[in-house]
Image 1 (cartoon, rainbow, N blue to C red):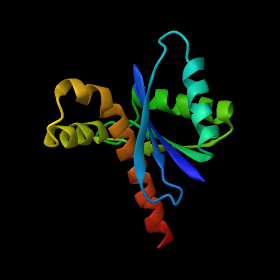
Image 2 (image 1 turned 90 degrees about the horizontal axis):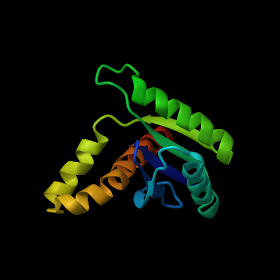
Image 3 (image 1 turned 90 degrees about the vertical axis):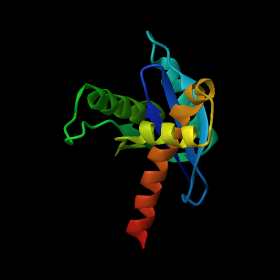
Image 4 (image 1 turned 120 degrees about the vertical axis):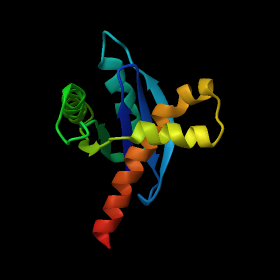
Length: 142
């Protein structure tokens, strides 16, 4: 079974998918969010869960630098709970502090243009979120 990683933003959702062994995360897509209607967002994710036989969805959990949960973190909690019910899948919140900054840094170092970075940064952030989770899982199995 595979694991899906999500970087949920207000305008887009970056999506990453693990390999079948749960070792590596690859960027899959970016879902454009619907401002007034979240149903299409959950429908698109549920379709990916079914298509890729996903068992667990890891959702970025934006914590403040001091570890407290702010408004963005509360939105992620609500999103995770709604997705769990909508898609009948296990959801896990994963600390995403600095993942977008790390994704930006990797893309800048790779000399990706600003225009292209904007299109892929959320997907890259989802890769960082999911890879962090996968790495922790492999450490606990060792």
